[in-house]
Image 1: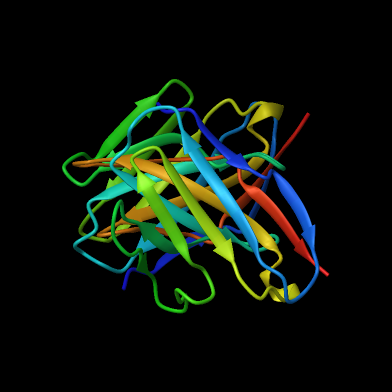
Image 2 (image 1 turned 30 degrees about the horizontal axis):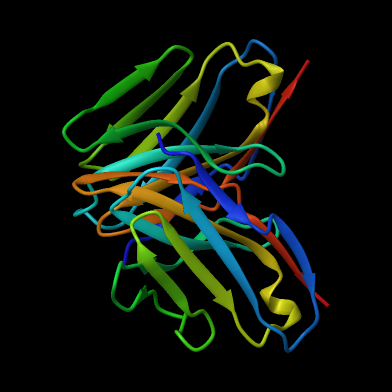
Length: 109
Length: 114
């Protein structure tokens, strides 16, 4: 089955700086890669996703890149703000969603 | 996206008892799923709830422990049976649409087993 690895497990950034989270996957059949943000005590919220026919996607301050050959994808958050503090999960979809272990992002004011 | 609700939002239960969690969607959805999120951990798929037929369970999860029902396209239940403290987790339902791989999550049920 699919195995998704996510790094780093924790990330602390100064407000206004950028944050980058990286994930690798094992199953070359995976074709959909969503990112979820989970604030404390809340449900996971889909923030951006990318499909295997696209190399990069951007939505305001967040962007995702995908390298199918290397089987890795990354989340980029620019101009970080305190409200970006949360746990971020990457996932890969073959016949089901397999999640990474999560990255706790802390934005220091 | 659909509005998803879960009941109860949280519960504290005694070991050996069972709890049924409900997931209600405000519109018809093709796919419904149940996940477990253990404290401080990631999300793990328990099973896919199939309308009118038995759920499809992932490795490590069995029907006797986690019976699931899905009587229609807007409602599903997950029962956690014969609970032990190791079952203390957040249980989340998610929904998706035919031909679309995107999933949206319900608010979760926080279960504590004493």
